[in-house]
Length: 101
Image (cartoon, rainbow, N blue to C red; front, side, top):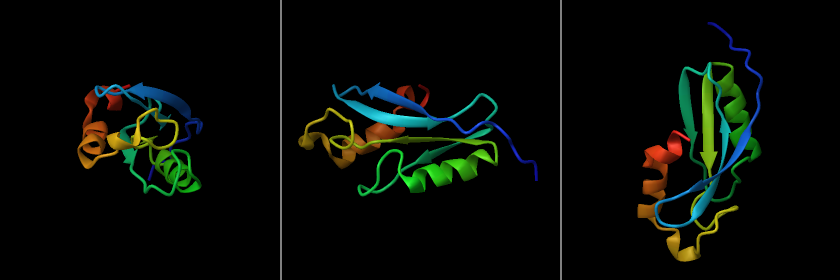
């Protein structure tokens, strides 16, 4: 199995949504990555929690970039609590503009 040796660095992002609020995200993506892992974690951990970073590090050794973001009204999101709905969460994780940032 080929081991990839890209430097493990993160990029912190603030992403606007179509619903008028921002969400924060962290990207561990480089041009040489051949796949992307979208890290969806529970409400108990942060966008850069130890668990997310460890998974991103392991994925990077396989040539896979990782992307993690906060849910509405969590972390650095400027959304009010009423924006935390299942529909908004689904729209956020399927929004191509956010995923291709």
